[in-house]
Length: 269
Image 1 (tube, rainbow, N blue to C red):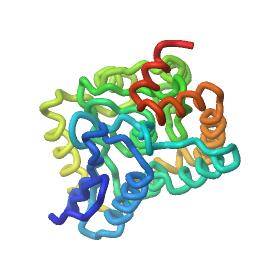
Image 2 (image 1 turned 90 degrees about the horizontal axis):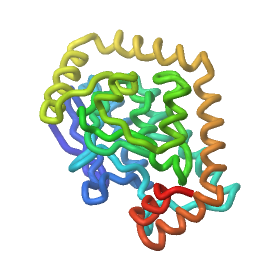
Image 3 (image 1 turned 90 degrees about the vertical axis):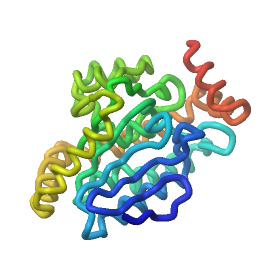
Image 4 (image 1 turned 120 degrees about the vertical axis):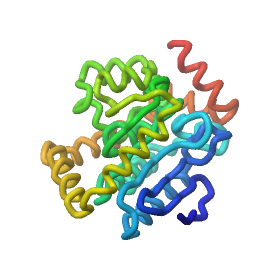
């Protein structure tokens, strides 16, 4: 095992590569550096012949609390620049890169999983296993924007997708398993063991056939128009970022921190 040198993640190579979001003091809030480093780590694993499976997880108390909205974090640009930013992110987004990898990716979710994190585990990764007490939801949808890359309508249907987006409610890992948003929920103390066992089982299979199986199943969604849907999600997310509510919340987050902005958002309008 060797560990690559990154600022916001850790990367461990091996038969099972492990990518860990590593800003635990910020609840693994995602910034531009982390986005770039996740993409780099995915590509590193893809090009390493030793790697057969990739596990994506978070350090500390949660998988990820979404975008870094505080001072120095995500900042909305004027309309054309914002649309371009959303376009560029979606073209080389970790979720897009992950989808196109030949190697399978297992997301290991504990604690909060919201915002950007849902782009990663909301269907774009191959398999998601969560702790039963994980808190999964699109709270940012109450005021900051919408998800840019996800398969919720395919996985859980339009009504549940809308309910979660409209309300910003969190559901537990156990409930996420029940409705099909994650493959399995397990006791928190067994999460590592559960993920490792599945990763080892997959890694014992023939890599060429596993790559073909992944491509075949992914192509099913692509033929139904996945990339066109994602392009429209990107455009709608850029529009959402420039709404009056989102603009005010982004400004509040920059001035007083993400916690103040989230409290304002969840207090109602």
